[in-house]
Image 1 (cartoon, one colour):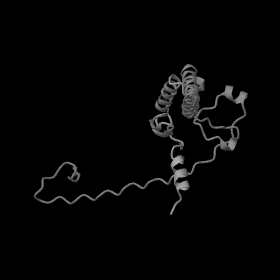
Image 2 (tube, rainbow, N blue to C red):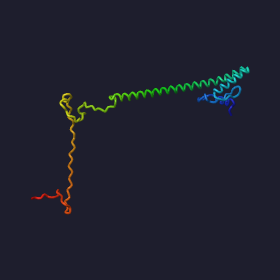
Image 3 (cartoon, rainbow, N blue to C red):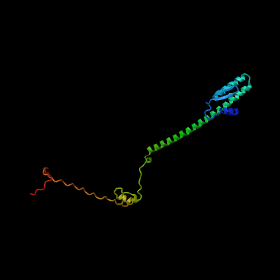
Image 4 (cartoon, rainbow, N blue to C red):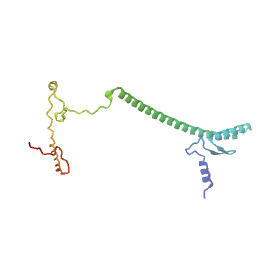
Amino acid sequence: MRSSKSRSRAKNNRNRPSGGNVVNRVFDSSGPEGKVRGTPQQIIDKYNQLARDAQLSNDRVAAENFQQHAEHYLRLLSEAQREIEARREEQERQNRERQAERDRERAERQEREAARQADPADAPQPDVMDFGTPEAAPESGLVETPESKGSEPAPAPAPEKKEKPARKPRARKPKAAPTEDAPKTDGDAPEAAE
């Protein structure tokens, strides 16, 4: 069996904030006048009202007691609000950083796009082959002129292309001999000797 002290301790620990949203959490406060239940702001208001009532009845001890209870929940509430404000500021800072990064990326994209449209030299160019070495230069099919001979060295002769073997002509099908029923055409008639 549990002792009454351990049950009492466990019961008191339930009133402590465990992370979460303390501002809207409902607490059960055991004050000198009995239990007070509500959110921290509601409990603070209730204890302040009880403290005013005690002062009006000239009970300074009870008034001080109620004020201390109210102060406890006021500390809980202010700490929770500070944490909420710190989280909100951190979230806003992160949002501003993300937005600034997106703005920078958008500006860079726009600059690249504007530069590409304005300057065709920056546009993607086709690949250019280097014909600096004679063996790498394929035959261009251009005719060499006397002007080009004097300005640059003559290119080395291109390697000879292997010629494909000539195709053999197809054999013609032999014409069928004309039958007696078929009329003879001029191409079929043998030349007559005169």
